[in-house]
Amino acid sequence: MKCLAVNTATKILSIAIVEDGRVIHSFATPEMRDQGNVLLDHIRSGLARNDLDFPDLDLLAVVTGPGSFTGIRVGLAAMRGIALAANKPLVGLSSFDMFAVRTADAINIIAVESWREELYFAVLDEDGHPLIECMNETPGVFSRQFQPIGQNIVISGDAREAVAGLFRGAQLAKKDATAADAAQLAIQKFQKGGSFVRPVPYYLREADVTVSARVSKALGEK
Image (cartoon, rainbow, N blue to C red; front, side, top):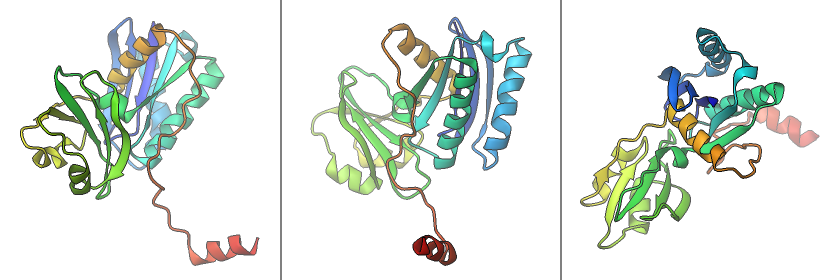
């Protein structure tokens, strides 16, 4: 099975092609403002280097967030378009899916970068079930609201360092959330069967958009 995956939701823009569990193409670069202009070029380049085209793929995967608002929209738009044009299944994965870790007898706190004072949080129990499915809060407020007593804690996510000192004795888990990881996880989910709905953006707060007075007035007049 060949899977093309992209992750444009976190700090690193990454693209990967995985075939039968083996990464045959991987590209990563720090998140950038013009990624919408280069994403498709990098995808085409990766396919061409492996003598592949979109019809040769079996599965597509995209990370839906939370994370970078622009990155989420760019990745989803590109992969939805490819899935529609090539008639391929598209699996959506959240950033929490990507950063989740399973450690025996430990709660997993997932902290994801939001590029603001607040972070995106989720908490999983020892069996991977959600104790807190999602939250947008500052690390300080989050730690006051959630202080498990007598339980081991593992903190993962690209914002784990910002949370590490708030939970005594917590371990930090460095788990990547690259497109290669997304492809492997998507293949596992796809092979388990079941129906897949069209991926949608996973937002936990409003976008940072300021509407000018002139535009606001024009909208009000309508």
